[in-house]
Length: 152
Image (cartoon, rainbow, N blue to C red; front, side, top):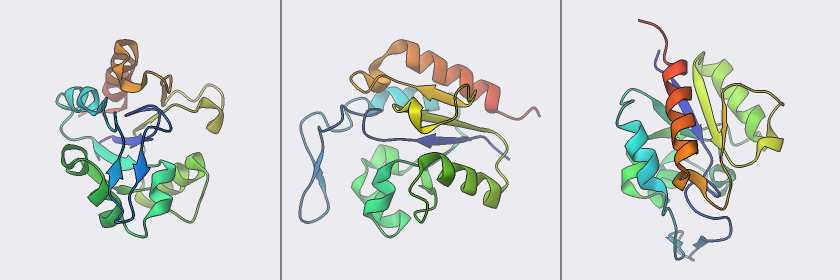
């Protein structure tokens, strides 16, 4: 099975507090998803990596399709779904997903290291004020994805 990348949204693709939701459920805000091109560039080298949303954004929509509808098309096309909504904890939802779907190889991209066990090797942390615009984060993500890919 291919590796899975679990993504957060706020603090990864744009600064926290940058985005708001309109009454119709669409996203607005200057700078929304401004750092998305960096993830897409990294993922070009990893076309088989599944992308799952573990962000609190998953809690705002009842279905994966509704969630994907508010994401930029370039990201939505890569997103396979979201971790379980009944588990508010990001890490617990990732663990539950991995257990249910028998995921062994994964990487987590997030801006909140306190949400995870100390020393979790699958975790790539970014500063919420720079997110994926930080070239060091991009390189750590590349290395983590390369390590996560199962040997053929």
